[in-house]
Image (tube, rainbow, N blue to C red; front, side):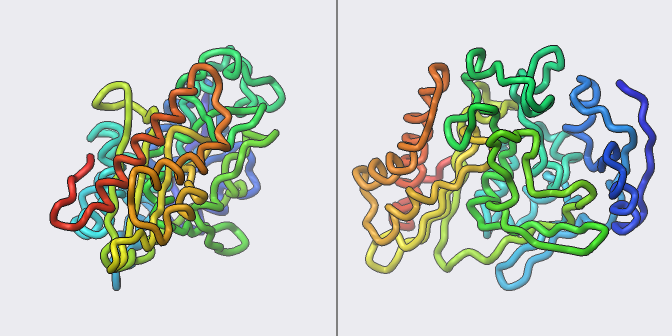
Length: 335
């Protein structure tokens, strides 16, 4: 590992000022992803600013709205009784990822900023446009079974690995950012950037900007939500595909609102907006789900090894929607 300087910040302002203006200085939160990348030589910062002791571990609830501090651990969020009751999709997504030890260290902000597990990104002996801009994307002709089918580009087909971010996308979460010049708030849907020809730029974060918290608006009355993850083994594996869904039914048995987000298929949590629009106002049926999900997936551009993801994410989503749209009292719980 390359030698680096270390500083522990005692306030948000101190942390932001320590990183702003220093391109090779980065924040250190839980360290569960960054330290691994430093050991691999993928990340080589000159200095780390430790933010793990900043007062950003709050978790508050008011009138159905929830605010989660950037340093709240994944374990604390997943185990919070209000989140388990009001936003089960979020709790389930966190518990579907990593190990108990990692969830005790991993932070909310760090989860959103996880780097791709694309093998070419993590192997510094291989070209990778995300790690070394302009060097190429050998994944397209190489091993791409676990990589993206939606929103990808000829420069990059990597996927964003966070389970939590998929659930937060379905919950219409907003992200608060602090910089040396002020504060701003962005929707999670606008937080991630499509790879295009610049896959090394993954979010709208400017250097030195710090995530301070995320905010979840109250769900509509009667909303139900679930997270379903398909992985190669039961524990400690990243998603082959995953689905977060929120459904609200009206008094006539029609879908008043459906929110669908997918993981493991795109460089960011993929919000299936076309499918959501097709579902709205209709009574649930297998034919409706097939039509709506096909409308979304007609834009997929799979490669030979990951073509199976098109039908897999469609079928898993249809199953989850069937469970959530089923009349209350006779609804199956999908985990």
